[in-house]
Image (cartoon, rainbow, N blue to C red; front, side, top):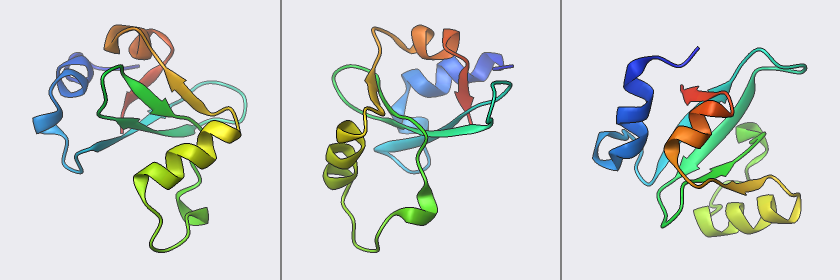
Length: 91
């Protein structure tokens, strides 16, 4: 279950240790946990089901986003609250 700090951290990218990306996780669903990356952008954007071990060395964030979008795993939310309501929490 997300704690009270998750929303604060998501809303403040200066708190993200790996800005412009923030690792997130969704637990408690079949096949869980799901790993995602929250990306700093105009709308809260999440890359779902990211396989960090499958990323080629030298890959860029832009390249990763394009590839993930092709797979239908790039998801934009209306708010950070919506990300939390979808079950995601800061990892």
